[in-house]
Image 1 (cartoon, one colour):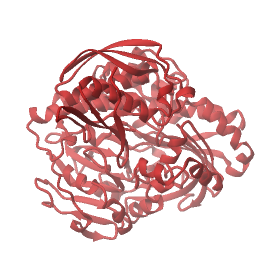
Image 2: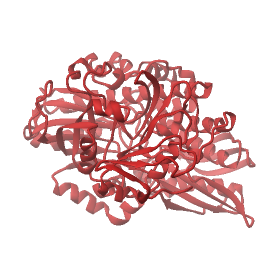
Image 3: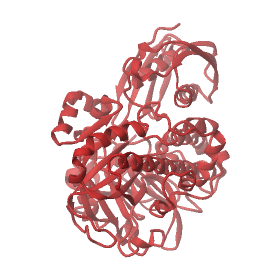
Image 4: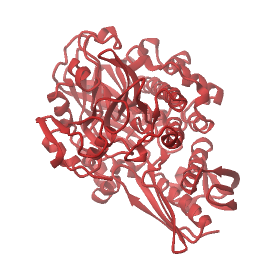
Length: 141
Length: 476
């Protein structure tokens, strides 16, 4: 499991995250951690009790990241499933297959900061520099 | 991106400023900013002027690219922007509507004075907070199937009333009678329906709220059919299409991104991604957007029903009657000077004047009610649209106070304790699912709604009816 490395960044009306990772697995895992840190006061209180398999595609790496986080959001909204850790079976710049390890939404234990309405393309950046991956994502809240 | 400053604007009068054609390349028309000097000094710091000019580069734009006085930086289009496009030659852009399709506001008159409710407000607030789902994971109280979501998409508030939420009389006081036609539910993705299915009949969070308010000032309060007096209790609901609408926007932004190349559309900012209105992509988006709009109206209708139920537990003879319900993130087919256009309103409200056949007969003499919710804890206004708005701003007006400070900055400057204490000092009862959410919505994070309303009234786009202050705020 990759260590999460993200920071929350400011935006005039919404909020976002910047991420740095050694590889795509780390980048995408950190994106989930960043999303959870935006939504929940204490994301570390998530109890991992179930797994879900997902398969996501994108025209390029940016679209793949947006589609991936969108799927995380859909699961949160529709099934109250909070993704904690991600185990990648396969990931490249246009496809990924993964197992999400997470649990049921529990506001009492995890606290609530804000809902995320959408993962935006605003100022979206995903790039590889000096052997490291960087990303910036703005969330519409 | 080239950034426009307020020094590049040409003053027309105290409330109108022109962004001249050519201030950035490829503008097909001018920009028109409705603002006072005071407001310009606030908005000069962000990209909203630039974004207004960018919209002017889109093909088929009719008239000017407009900015209302609550304008602030958005994605592609600024929030508080209005732009109309020729139905045959123009484009549609999901960014010109926003993620929260048909985020809008509903206002209701009651048969009570605020004074009569004083001793019951805490109990009513608690019941509203309990009965109307809000906050993260706030599911609707009603379980519906994905198939039934299709009915909501096509029938809007009619679906809600059929199911027993509210009364048929409510519907005519809703923009477009609470249901836009031409919805093909197949154009709304399964992801959107999944998100929406569990959230129908819920408030959400962020700047969504319910309020009980007191009329503090009347301007044309007794213009028939209104009979407002100072001290009257009124109610307000502000929410939108929840995860369903957000997902529709996300889906079609992706589609329109690819449409730019397919249709060879130049944009200075790809977030203005668009497709010709005549294209399949555009028609699909409009169908899905209408469905999401209908979903939002059904949502507000259900919340109204539970609001009535909650209040009547403590005030059995309480009557809440509709004043009006307006959308402020939507694209509408309208006609101006015999030309059929698609008007994008993103953080802007329709403001039709007297005699417009699209407004209820009860308001034909006076014009369409325009509801302007202030930021949390501050004043709200009920206005009326005007003929001038129809002539000049595609029948449009501002929608609220407009953010002036980022959420992060608000959290830096204000503590949770301070935010709640300020509300308490004003005698406002707050029930909130997120305490941090309250901080992000402090009045100091927004422009002054009085300043915003002064501009639209000064420019002749609207007339004031009443000003209200909150007594109870419920937010997610």
